[in-house]
Length: 106
Image 1 (tube, helix red, strand yellow):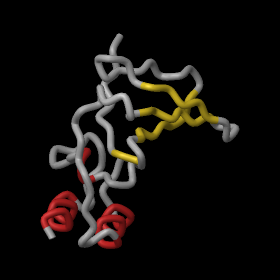
Image 2 (tube, one colour):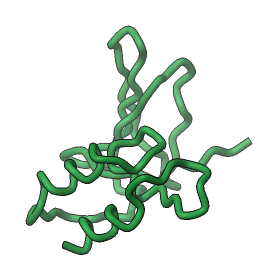
Image 3 (cartoon, helix red, strand yellow):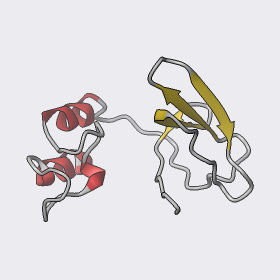
Image 4 (cartoon, helix red, strand yellow):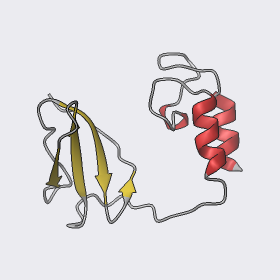
């Protein structure tokens, strides 16, 4: 219920608004709307392992390209991986899909 409450508190916000919180954007489209609320509701009661250790050798990143092709890369010893040029999306895996914090470095 905590997750449903969190999304509800940010419902109707979009990226850039004062009350916006990227964590409420479950379906990552820059807005907290019914799609996010539905995603949380459909997974009510589900649970899983939350890992912050991206240096684990079992963690991989799948870069997805517009034409449907993809490339899978292992993270380095520091938990980093270079973004593949031309990738339009990516997923982080450790036996199954997990969430990820993406930091861009110049």
